[in-house]
Amino acid sequence: MRNLADLGAKAGALLKARGERIAVAESSAGGLISASLLAVPGASAYFMGGGIIYTARAFKGLLGLQREDLKDMRSSSEPYAAFLAETIRAKHRADWGLSETGAAGPTGNPYGDPAGHTCFAVAGPLTEARTLRTASDNRVENMWAFAEAALGLLVEAIERAPPVSAS
Image (cartoon, rainbow, N blue to C red; front, side, top):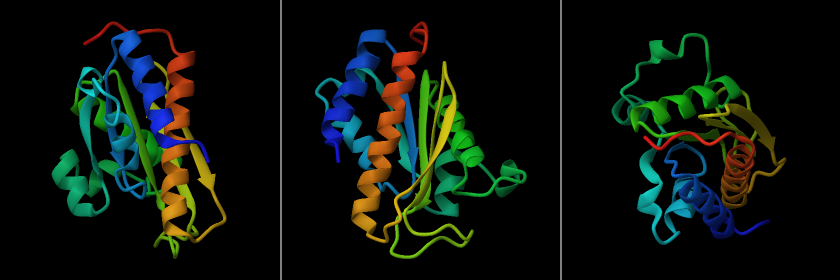
């Protein structure tokens, strides 16, 4: 497994070089994504904020959303991850939004997804969502794998996207 600090540093360097900012909404990664981005000295140049959207209360309180805002989306899906990424991006007036939503384990979620299932997305100049299934019920290992996958997608997206003007 790649080092989360290295991925956070790479993403941070890319964001700083481009003068762009990010906000993060994560769930089953438990803050590891944000911590990886914030571990970089000078992170205040690009990290706008975010939250761990782990419960319906956090969904409402931290994002200001209601269940009706989801329409027919369900949690732990690519459309929901893309919705979260765009919502957190817009709420923080950032250039990029990054989200993750899944089931770290040791059991699956109420939607029928097994432990080790997550969906993650980036929104900004490029929008993309992906699914990862680790086939593991090890909660901690899954949390790290989820964070690694989300940060990897962020780095890929920044490298592929045309620069945006700083907000």
